[in-house]
Amino acid sequence: MSEKQLEDVLPLAGRRVLVTRAVHQAGKLSDGLKALGAEPVEVPVMEIRPPDSYEPLDAAVRKLASFDWLVLTSVNTVQAMAARCSKLDVDVSGIKLLRVAAVGGATAEAARKADFRVTVVPDSYNSEGVVAALGNSIVAKRVLLARAKVARDVIPDALTDAGALMTVVDAYQTGLPDGARELLAEALKVGVDAATFTSSSSVRNLAEVAQEAGVAFPFAGVAGISIGPVTSATMREFGWEPAGEAVVSDLPSLIEAVVKAMQGTGIRE
Image (cartoon, rainbow, N blue to C red; front, top):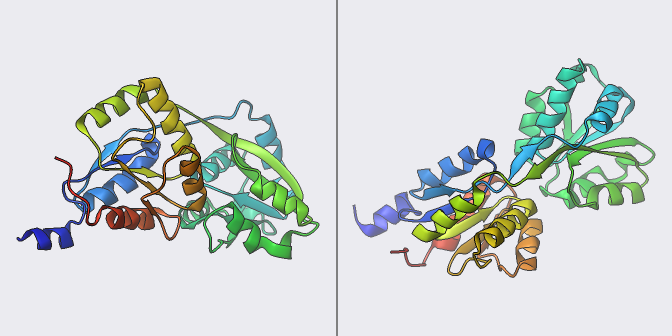
């Protein structure tokens, strides 16, 4: 097989690509990169942890039937909500009047598997897309937003301005996993060609891990690939201009962006 044929079949052959997702979420991205010839280098910089207290979340779950809308912004949120519903014996499939908005196809798929009746999936897989998709349907409606402890206020602020009666609760929080500094140092010692970012938190957390490891951030000579415009904006805040950005904010599109960014660049020796 010629080099050109190899590139057509395995466009990421010989590339080492940093994957920063949490351990339990890295597999799909790593597998997709590996299928195209890349060597995924997993350095998880995020660990999903329970909120400081379950009381606000549990109070919302117990009165879930009183809400008109539930907004789910990530698979992590879905899993946290589903776990508390199970814990409190709340059958979401029986709440017929609750409408659910899910950010992105993966979130919607996870929500449906958890028996949430998803009615809205925005065209843009970000907070702004949710606001645009819901439009006037939330005026004077009770809206529950379950999210990570540290999250932007785009959704609650915009929906409140649009007339929604908002309740916001923390479903989980994130932290740095043990050993991230050592894993990053080892990965950079061997060398990587690209780094993938699936959220603003992954950018901030990797920057923190790099600082702890005494490594300059952004990484010299490493292409940073973003899952979407919000994540790209966070990269720029840290002085890292994205070499690529997913057209759609999902993993297949992120992988496509990696391939496009790597085209025409030399393979690291």
